[in-house]
Image (cartoon, rainbow, N blue to C red; front, side, top):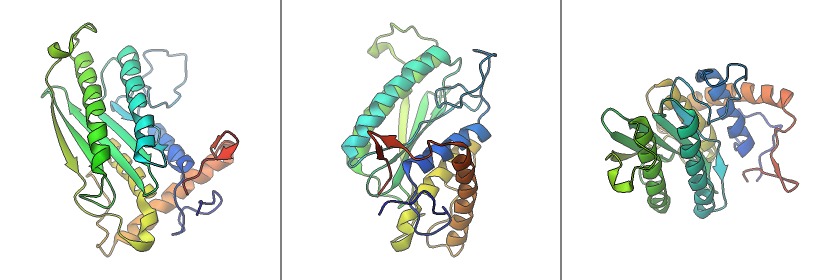
Length: 258
């Protein structure tokens, strides 16, 4: 069933659409990132995920697809563009990369944190259902593009020439982690992946414990998710008032998640 954009996000039946998550991520960028103005002091910040910020974080716009292949077809080219644009416009390479996406099952997140001094990075495969729920095929397909982006960022941060060959690039130790606990649950809670993933993006940006959301088995879990949804609702209502393009359209059709 498609979500109704006029239904309050606090209602348990609401599934977050791509438009919901897009605007919530824009709010996160505006509120929690301090954008650098040294490139063009006369140009106001656009809040784009490609705009340099003091937190050195890149929060990509969300993508969705009917299959894992569709997600890959969206994410991989975006990573290439990201690497190229950041090399051109950022004075310091990002240390946090966040990639939210949706498939017909639920919202998920891929995150990478880079330590240039130690030449190391950690990739986080985050599925709200916990360990073992993130599709292995998607992990295998995204691992190399992510490693290439991390290598490019490290090369740029270390001041190496753009002509540096693959064999001359700095070695980066890349570790991988999965979300351990189920912070979503079954049944009615299946529709909570949207607010959960948006909150985890906030956690990464704010440097708080990831995830800050309690396990699904915790007695306070439902109350916590209700508070998160209520906060999201206030943000989305503001966007609806000031953005006529709130509902996404492509080829004349509304783009909703189920």
